[in-house]
Image (cartoon, rainbow, N blue to C red; front, top):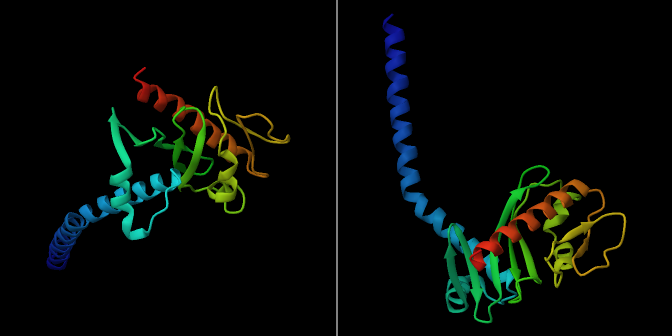
Length: 191
């Protein structure tokens, strides 16, 4: 009985100490995590806008060239020439896909897409994040919708070749693009 009470007290004290350590570490690291996430978004937006920068210049170049317009819960990153960028996210085949897309000022032509996070199969759907593949989206039109085509060669202004062996990932990415672009442009225009 005495050993059981001692064990319970030991577990409670140890649990309290470890909980305090975790809360303290979280308190001190949370601002750094938030800052790093903001830097990652700024860096990705600059890359999506084809801007050249050094790693230590991200914040300055971003603040000098990009105006952040918040509409509802969406941040729009607008260049002086009115090209815009915004974040996209949705479900891929195996996990979430997060990206930043930039559009020219006509709001219908893709300037560039940068993938922030994806969990697709390496060598197949994971090729979605490959810069060589993402270049296929450059200068493609998003209106009325972007189509990722398989089994045929992309020929139209709104078509992009799919990734061989990754049809499901391509369809998931196509859905993310079409849904998110439509929704976010509607928010941006105030519709």
